[in-house]
Length: 303
Image 1 (cartoon, helix red, strand yellow):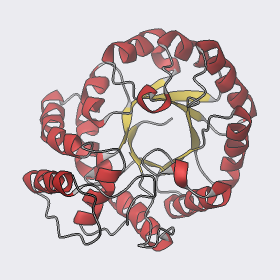
Image 2 (cartoon, rainbow, N blue to C red; image 1 turned 90 degrees about the horizontal axis):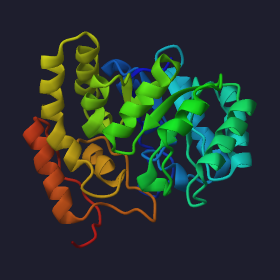
Image 3 (cartoon, rainbow, N blue to C red; image 1 turned 135 degrees about the vertical axis):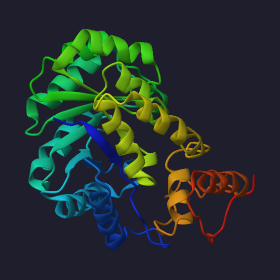
Image 4 (cartoon, one colour; image 1 turned 90 degrees about the vertical axis):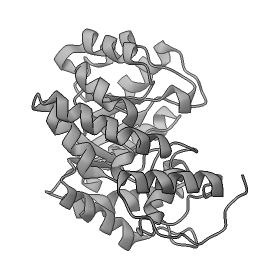
């Protein structure tokens, strides 16, 4: 159901920190023209944690869904560390016109595997849209194990997992335990090619905010059995991927887009603009990739 290239879409802000609706629509149109398969607004890269309440979050989702309607799929971030709040978010998504919900493992609470099972089963029971589970222990403090994933794969509404543990052995066990009953989606740009090799079906990508055509070409090449091309594209992308994680995501990807003239604005506090030294390293990585960055004005922290 959800495979190929999905972009973890940034949320553009104005210089005053307000939602930039016009730029958001422009970004969606850019990805339509680039051949992107789907967009994921209001995830980690979309700064979901600092969007102002349900109203602003739903505004972002509605705009993306309107622009994408009939052209690409939309899987919107809906997970929180409260099961009841996650259920309320998921229940609104069908009305907002999206195709699926991205539901992160509850953060801060640090539930056990039994708690994760209960959480996702409760959400799935109340959802009218397909669910992509999101395992990112580096952000949440809890790792959803393959045996837990396999149990949840039996739920009708749970169709995929965005696996961002960084552990290829764990991803391999998910494929072995779940087979065709659950779609494995990479949550790490640097591991997308290896995950495709073990049975993954796509990625929810940060780097594709910048170079969607190349990431899409890598996935299509691998799916077509052209491993030489897929491997070559993976290795070419690798330094750029590394540069986009020099600081906390989405600080670098917003910096990159600003350097490339997209004017997506700064991240919201508590995240800040990249430091001058890392921003310079990112600029060099963009140039080395063949892109043409411009000067970006604004205050930077010292580093």
